[in-house]
Length: 388
Length: 187
Image (tube, rainbow over all chains, first blue to last red; front, top):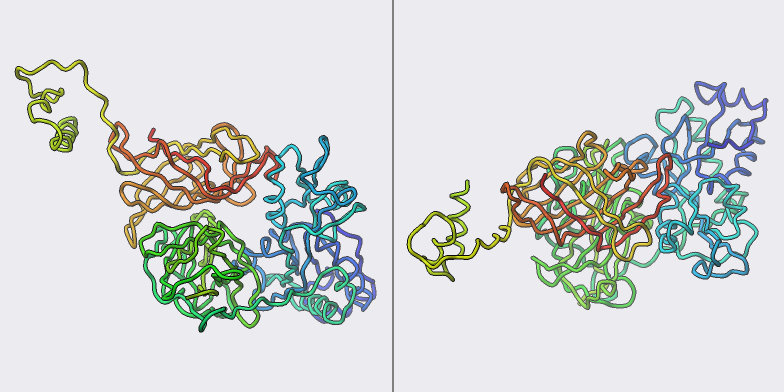
């Protein structure tokens, strides 16, 4: 862990003391290297208002004494799902796109022999690492050290860690900077003040907004033909016995119908979802024929962060099922809904149509090591976007 | 046990073989028949329970830019649940929270999740730290002791990463594919 030199003004102590116990300690904000690079100026600005906060650079999970964490979905899922961080009060501060840095903007595939591509490591770098894996391990250096990343001639990094080379957009989903207060912190109230300040910075076009992008425009969920169609009935399902024993939300009927997930405010307290456990699945009858049309054809609503989903499709309830998308991160925000979503295109599986969809856990986390009642991908609903 | 195996084999073969020839095949029928040069190997029978000691073998897919050497783990398997479908749980020997397989069993096939703990992975018998998040599937055939096993044709669809000792990254390569090899061999 590297601690940035954001030091509180001494005169801030009385203000902090009024807001929380443990006032002698500043509020600890913990963020990965990419988000920390964005937050440093804002935390300094916060401290100039008479408060006291420090920025710790490291993966948000484990929290290591943090009062407020800022991380990408991939880093936050267990903190939020497990109740360590305040899910209800969590805020998406903004988006941080990935860039490929290279001399003259040359593609990574054209990287000369002897050169290596530096890639941000950790969970935040999962998708970038997958992108770079085709180069082979000898040509990729995974690191979380911001100094190494910004100094690299060839790098695949969030924009905040880009060095001097030419930048070009990378085909990796932007990181989502989600901020959440740690519920067991002795400085919860003070941490909420920091969070409110950061949120205000984004809204008012402050320092943070110069580093993070606003949320992209929501994609339309309006079906191209006819009325919205959601899963009509359950054809088959399976959860491992271990998941049935440990999870709370095992009813496949929760997948039927429109998205209706509700977070009830306390850890593991939901309504309207089915947790898929370790590798569980549900087969749904969409009641209509899904067709390969313009853009994505299927939308899956998934409730916590960006837990991955695998989708198969068939014309027959008993299969055989064709793979449409394997372990697709399912964290696109759905404005106005509790659940996030991810989209699938029948064309990716070479299918022109299908009626039955098999939705499978893509997280595949060991059941016995789970520490929540919602292990596995949490499915809220399945929607047809192109139908006949 | 031998008698039951022999009877089963006989019944399975009866439709295409004369009874006389069948009992000449070494099942104790005796009698004056044409000598047979040697017993033909019995093909493995489909199915069989997953129980006891096994070796899980995972082989990175042919398109992966990483070592494709097989990675093996000593595990134990046991039946786990019957509803809504029968299941099997397979755990790493000595450290059962680190590598866990939760598989649906149809009796003649297995399919389900293979998962390791994030960031830590599971140590293979070859000394590699391995991260896996995928769906394994394969046809089950009887081993010599009657237990079920997957010896060939099994696949793993998903992520495999290799991590050097002391690293917290899959620095030795990673790959997401639908054609990793998978086997579950009785020990």
